[in-house]
Amino acid sequence: GEFYLFADGKKEHKDVKVALKIFSKDAFEFTAISVIACLKQYLDGSICEPGLYLMGSVVDEKRIVEDLKTMGLQIEVSIS
Image 1 (cartoon, rainbow, N blue to C red):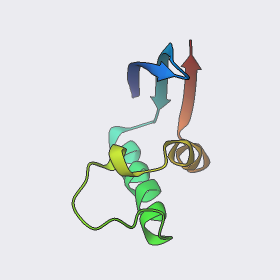
Image 2 (image 1 turned 135 degrees about the vertical axis):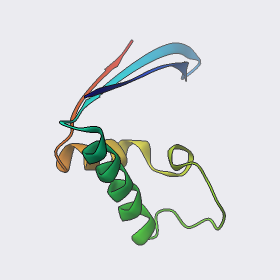
Image 3 (image 1 turned 90 degrees about the vertical axis):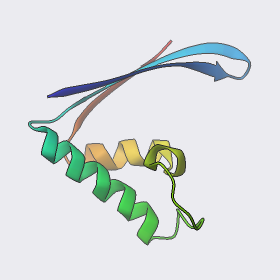
């Protein structure tokens, strides 16, 4: 299936819109690959703060997108 994220924010004091589309053959594959990408950062020490966090608030967002691509997910990002 396809998964979408639409976000508004600021970059260098300018309004920015980001659209992220991720395609996977099935939702279970998407979930498993996402967890593995997060665990890679945890196991190499990139995520080192103790406590319970939402995955999206502790991972390096650029790295996780690249890891998801490497593990076979198709990702399209557009920034305007």
